[in-house]
Image (tube, helix red, strand yellow):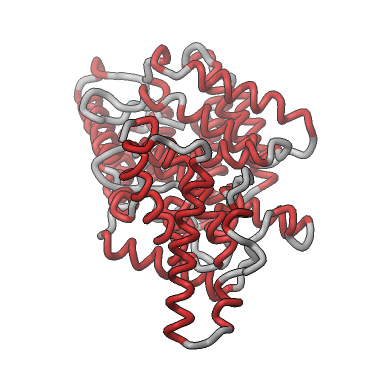
Length: 426
């Protein structure tokens, strides 16, 4: 099968799964039926040609597989009521083969609040993203059997929770719709973050996860073009991912924001992200993703580190802190304050995070404290905190970077001529 057909099957798979699941309400069986339909397409289309309506073709094949499955279940259980439980006889496969895109419904199901974030991420990548269980397990550094169990439990949770399979606009009320959309965006945000900065392992980035998060967020934005936070999240992803090529060196080593070659930043993505956030901000209420996108835009539009508008970034973080008490927001605000008012002012703000406790064991708190101590000229204390941060991170590139920073300061204490300005990827 050629690359174009493979791409088409990948694009259609979640739509077909959503359509079949909407009728039969059995996640596991529907997924198996869709996989069989995709295999049939991969075998037949190279010889017979791609059908005029490939989506309808796949739905018809998958629906036939599901019908066989339901009949088998009915025969085995000898209970006619099973038909009513597993299939809606008033919704034939022909009606499912419309141009309605069920991707968003499927996303809302996979990101249901009944699931833990890790289960929602895994199920979203499997059902909507089309990644294999092995690929997802590899991305999160767990055995394939463990990930398979996690996905299976997530499907069972959805099955027993009575999640309504319908369009978000058909949910009971506006608060419920907003809550469910918020869950969807949060899961996509977590997927992107894991791809942009891996939580562990030998690679700093897992670009396949970032790309998948962007693709899925585009799908949500296409279906809900007037939602400001969806547009804000897409803008944030584009503006952040635009720096991806410049974040690592030839050997995969971490290159912080202030040291990156900005000619390697993706200007098309930056332009698209800036256009999205510029069009969204004036429309009404502003949410956290829009504010984060605005911060990313300020970074991306600076021609050099010295041109960064830190007062504006500091002000935007203050807006963000009024929306959320996320300790990472407070941490980044401290960096911005240090860049505007000096390292001592930033270090004072870190004391609140020490008392908070939520970042007590997180390497980034020590990394930021080390950076600010270095800015303040307290090299011995900075060395200690760089070492603590290195010991706490599970990301090999981040650990190597932090160890290198500590080693550079030790050399600087011995030989002041080795001085270089400190840097941190904010």
